[in-house]
Amino acid sequence: MTKKTIWNRNYIFCMMISTAAAVGHGMLNPALPVYAQNLGLATDIIGIIMAFAMFICMFGRGFIGGCSDRVSKKKLVCWSLLILMSGYICFLFAKNIPLMLLAKTLQAVGQGMVNTVLSTLAFSSIPPEKMASGIGMFSLATSLAQCFAPNLGTEFAYGNQFSLLFLVSLAMTLVSLIILNFIVEPKMEHQKQRRTDRKLCLRDFICIPAIPAAIMLLFNGIIYSSISNYLSLYGLERGFDRIGIFFTINSIVMLVTRPLTGKICDTKPLLLIMLPGYLTKICACLLIANAGSLAAICMAAGCYGFGFGSTQAAIQIMAIRSVGSEQRGKANGTFYVGGDIGLSCGSLVAGTLAKNVGYDHMYMTMAVIAAACLAFYLIYQYAGQRETIFEKLHQYKEERKW
Image 1 (cartoon, rainbow, N blue to C red):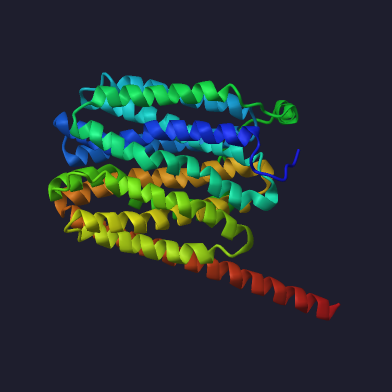
Image 2: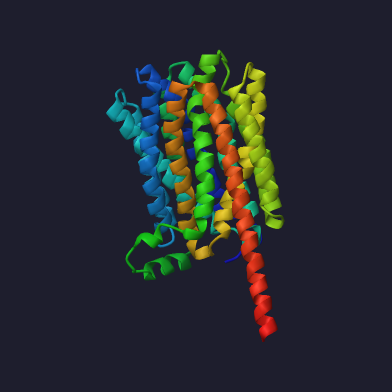
């Protein structure tokens, strides 16, 4: 049943689950490279582990995205959370490369699957005319977690309290599993899914109209990976004791940016969000690369929070709008797969660049990648407008002939 407000039972509980799961994930990201380095692993090895984990996560995203259009989304979220919990349990015993690889893979696959199917479940309860606002508000769950989770994870890492970190992340995932019991899926949706007996094929997992959005998320993923995975090590190298403040400022800015992005995109073109978003993201990367003080890092955090918060929400809106409601799960899966490829490549590329040319040049490269992403969107926008013009001209000619 269509509702006139985005604030309904399923939507609220989905946001709560997303927040709890994001806390555990947000603490782990900046702490894991430090943990691996304490075990004696080189920076490039850390990058390879994260790249492999995100590569495997990509298949999980694609699979669950297609399945979420056919089977119970609530059950899929449950299995995803169980996989995520098993990853945190493995981290408690990960003292070598094989166990570290297993733990990170399970954690990445579980988190990826949760994000994909949970957002699809939440979006199914949003009125079409408020879809952009609903997507923008839903992303606040992650932003709220990012306000304190990475900073807390950094403190755990600097205090060498990794076992406590993994236990807290495990507890937050367990909280998500408990909240899941309060979500009720519509019966009509289940009946429709039971009647679907066609075998799955490749087109059930790849959404062609959402590929441009996936490519843009790929670029975003590369930049995000370089910051979330290596900023802590960069801070240690530069002598910034409280580098975790970057994540706090970044998240506070996103808290303001993302809801506004949704409201604007409900009535205005996406270009009004994409252009300033990517320009500020370029500035953020340049500030980090040339940071001489913690104040510069704080300025970069503000720029990146605005750039990442606005463009990430706008790109997801772009993906969801490219299909009908019956294919949102597949579109979401394709969209997130692009991000997984970006995170996978970003971990590997950033780790290799950091080892060979240093962190400053690595972040300069990220500024170039942000510029390339903006160029891609402008070309995509121009091509779409040109196609519309040609369609109108063709229609005009046909009407004149008639």
